[in-house]
Length: 387
Ligand SMILES: Cc1ncc(COP(=O)(O)O)c(C=O)c1O
Image 1 (tube, rainbow, N blue to C red):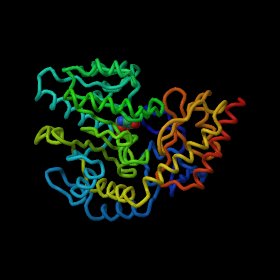
Image 2: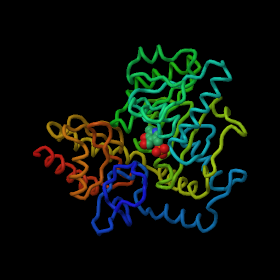
Image 3: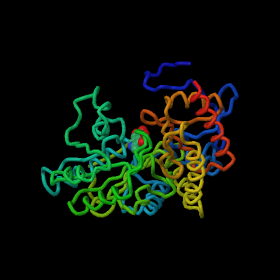
Image 4: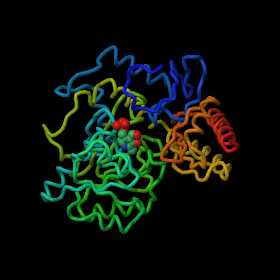
């Protein structure tokens, strides 16, 4: 099946018809254990009863009102999300890239109010911030800067973990530092706590907004609501998307302190952002994450996967990285081959970077599914090692 899509995705050919919990069923009836959750989107798995009920109830009552009006669902979500993230205000949109666009606009306006030349945004090499023109420019990987120029100016890239490079890049022309606490697309590469703390200190001392892109690693994925809080760091601006509404499109840029009041009427907008349907879904996700023990369980389940894989190690796995249920295995054979072998065995995994198999299972995954998935993954790694 090809359809009439522009050929922008490397698809597997699988066509899914339904899902339940951590299992997806394809058209031919074959079932797959889902260690991908879309790409970290189905945080509550598939067909979660409370999520389904909330979406159905909301759809039957009110799907959309423009942002000239309000809905109770979006109002409640704005309170709950700001409180979960420890932020003062938010802007709701529809995707991760759009959330980062919002963050970039906040930093630029915030900087310009202090000095006309305070417009530079520093990001890290290996980062990924989205597919719009500005977020491609923010992405610190040359391969994303080749085809769609001219790109907007004002982005500077530094090597992650290089304290001296960060120190010298954060000059008086810089309005914001944007970074992923765990780089997802480039291979599940966590920034060290000490580097994150240094970044926070330098930003605070020099009047620069610290902005964390937690589109992939936020919303409980690492076992804390925000991944940055694991290092004891409080960003001025944080972006969220992916798992926030359990599968419905949503993005959010949240800010605190002076950054929270930077954007005013007419500065920004989105037709669909903050629609009641996505808001109702996001409220269910936040409710589940806030239930007693939920985030600790994410950390524990992640540890179970991590330790199992750490015990396999060489020659199957070179390194295992990540936190909570965001895990990357650096492998010595092409990760796409592992992904194919996993599919044959009935397991969906992701790849990242050049040599990483990435696992982002639903946050609600149970131990039996974890162990089954690990068995299939190990079989795939062993088979790939013999080829
Ligand atoms: C860290 C990060 N930022 C931004 C994005 C872009 O999100 P979206 O595809 O929802 O625009 C992604 C997507 O993979 C991401 O991982």
